Image (cartoon, rainbow, N blue to C red; front, side, top):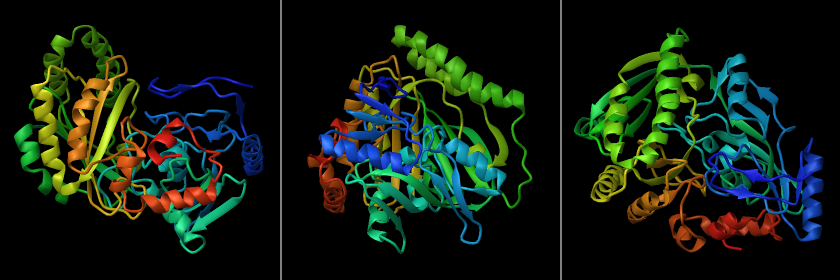
Length: 433
């Protein structure tokens, strides 16, 4: 069967010549070997939550429909192995049922595990911020059809490089995560002024386990969310009414409807942002970790996110605001601000340095291009690295200096996929051919 492919934001589309839904690793091997013999390409897609065309299929598209679920649990080692096509929200629910949890995660749980780690999906704070940094084992099918396993003792160099593999090294089949006993978080959401939020930023990050901040463009208003671990599982979640009001109605239904209005009348956006920022009042609640980390996102948007060195973050944010204020652009979506500890994953945006992430968004029906083109040079000037799954204009030539082990990654790609069975236009741009 054949069908078209489209990512969640609608920004990228493709029309592969063949679509398959493999039921096991052997079927994936067969698809890869056939593509190699034909001189064509194959790509396993996820849920399409990347804003780039990183997973866009050219010839054969594999769907992970039959490749979800937990394979094994080692309670002594505190590890869980799952099929790579499992959605994060499914893993979270299964872990909760077993009294286990991931250490950290981002705020969306729709992605497949393979897609999330391959693009470097991350949260904020903690000891390990990205999902990739919590991976301690994996299995993949290489471009020659070989099934290879990697752990900290078996093929450790592959584990080092493939935890953020961009889909360029192979088709991931299983992933093993370090997990923890189930824990709860207390969340506190507090509106703040620009000066208050930035003036106390470093102290706030040091005082809390996780901090996530949102600045509303064209205003002096920010919303600061802190998440802190509780000593037990006695939680006080939001009432159903308050959860619906804040997370479903204000943040999604009303916000989406008003974006349609502002797209037609951009002159009212500053007033709209003032209203939006003031409708979100302070609130506190607690729940098991994944229910606090993640939240629903039904308003479709486009996003660019950059990681700059931690010490450059506030300066980069101030410069981005100054550039936006000096332009005639009108932006409805808040800018998200997060920080992460350094990791040792070669193609991670946090490789070798504590990082400050700035994420810029527009509604799907607004033109994102001028906004992102305005901001991207500022991020690059601060040695920024773009999120692999979010919009950017970087190429292999200017990405290579940003990643000390870029050449090592390319060498491994040459070994695992010498015929470029997993290539597509995006990978040719960011890695070369």
